[in-house]
Image (tube, rainbow, N blue to C red; front, side, top):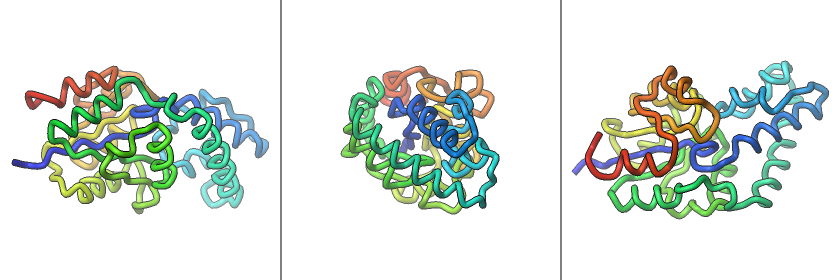
Amino acid sequence: MSTKAVLFDLDGTLADTVPLISEHIAATITSFGVAVEPISVVPYIGRPLEFALAELSGFGAVDERIGHMVTGYHESWRRAINEQGDELLLPGVHCMLTALREDGWRIAVVTAKTTPEAVHLLERIGIRDVVEVVVGNDQVANGKPAPDSVLLGLRLLDAPLEGAWYVGDAASDMEMAMAAGTRAMGITTGASPREALLAAGAEIVVDSADEVTARLVGPTI
């Protein structure tokens, strides 16, 4: 029997962290003299952090201030994650992952975070033990929406591209899934509304982890 694989985004898909990310990125950039509101950050969620900081600040990717921003953001973000812990786990996610594993699905998290940051968040929200593979932006040459991360996740799972799903909350997630050739499932628990997910290539859009389970466990869709 062929290996079934489902790869998940992290922020906004498994963890309710989109408001926190927006707040902390905006505060970080503002501390460097460029006023940014959290709402302006949302369209960049799902893209590599350095890209978001460079675009929103206007400093450019090679400006040395970007490195200082990255450090400052990671420090404030880690404190927030440590404080809130499993309160950030989205409803139904643990049950969803457990049901998928029991149904024979191989599970990876593929994220624009660095791998250590992703692992830390998965540990704090209590689901690291049900995720087999974690692929961060630091493991690939090209981050979202390039297909590199998804393709690496499938290789690490030893799973075929055919029939694999990528589940994410942002338009960039759908773009990455389309570029990689996986099936794309959008979820409206994070950065992008249903219309944006569909426009970016989502085959299906759901509103909760329970709906992901209903779609993937049981009859093949």
